[in-house]
Length: 232
Image 1: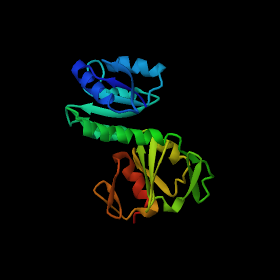
Image 2: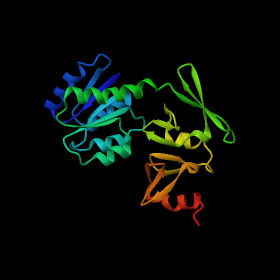
Image 3: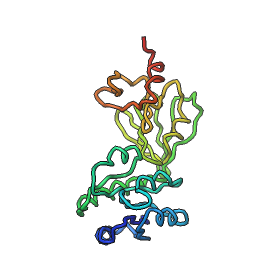
């Protein structure tokens, strides 16, 4: 996996570089001292993974991610916990608090590697009136019945499709998946979640529950959701 480091602190870059050197499947392509340098580098180079600091001059790491049209896998590395909510909204692979030790670093890059390896998975197109979709993993096609899909979670350019027994990670955006499914059966109640309306058991204080599993409801989606679930 080709990766870059983006951090204005030289010591932090050096420490991270030493960690990267211990992972055989990571190849460091560039060290960037600013988000602007990283942005320009990413425009011309094919990078799989970015280790990104948040608080930097000129542009924050959060702002850099928001400005990228083609987004690599992102691991945020920061000295503060204040940005955890924003990181969740951006669907980054992981969020690490400095100083970074090897075991925590390995956990984060393992998550990134899993996303990278399923990059060739796709959802096969079907008409919206069909009751199934196919997920392609390498040369294998797996059939998923639409009525078995409980909810779908965004992971940047990937999604997790959840059924009662399995989770399928697929290289497609949540918007792309939403376009393949019937709006009568599925509703996007949060920027990161698409939920099967038939599987909602209750709605309470801005949260929809599938069994005991909570799904957050975005403020802008609440009114339409109440219409969708036939509120009396």
